[in-house]
Length: 349
Image (cartoon, rainbow, N blue to C red):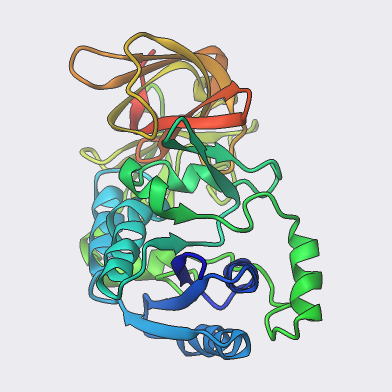
């Protein structure tokens, strides 16, 4: 009879092919489309067309109210001069926990998504590993999910090649075979996050100073929510040399610029760790990824007495950004395992 699986279906290629693969394997599959904003009709229609083609039931879950929690987090982080990571936050607090609870409520035992990463069972325990398709790897986005979910999680396209998936989708006659990858935040369909923030929190629109590290005024801004650490473009200030945002001061409403060297840091401090393996008892060597689109950097990870995390890189890393997740990877005989992660509070040197 196969496994009883609820598949998250967004109307895109990856989730649609996850549904196709699991259905073809003889599992008892149902789909779930999550409405996260008011303009989801096209994506819902695509997901329904795929579900109909595969002969599986599709549940339409109106989660707009649930996503208010994500929007509140999103706005609050910008208020405090942090750069949020809504996907990581959502995957823990809304998506994976919510999908699994819904799956259980309709008699299903597993959930599946179209993420490019792997769950491997070792000695009766389940661990999260990077995709072997490194360019596509999405393990970072899952770093904060509850570890107990791993034994109920299936990732059918974890190691696949996207072009090959499109080819198979076309052969199966699925309408999404040529659908482009989504580049937008799922709850902001036009990707205009500044407008969304300002409509929800007009007090973010505050004139302030752009300064250098010594406090010298270089120019002015209309809201620090329009900036992120490491930003170089769109500053509107000519200094005769490359300038970067090196810090945001929410209390003083200041954007602080500096040179590239001032963006480099050997250490970071992070809080609220989440472990997807056994909690380390000693400092450990890891590859640390401080941002989704960053490379990983080798270094040491230490759990401090207060439970916070100290990371010391072998060589300085660029643009340590409060609000992002620092994710810790170690290599073993099965591949590259995601040990855990924590929310970055700032550079520590």
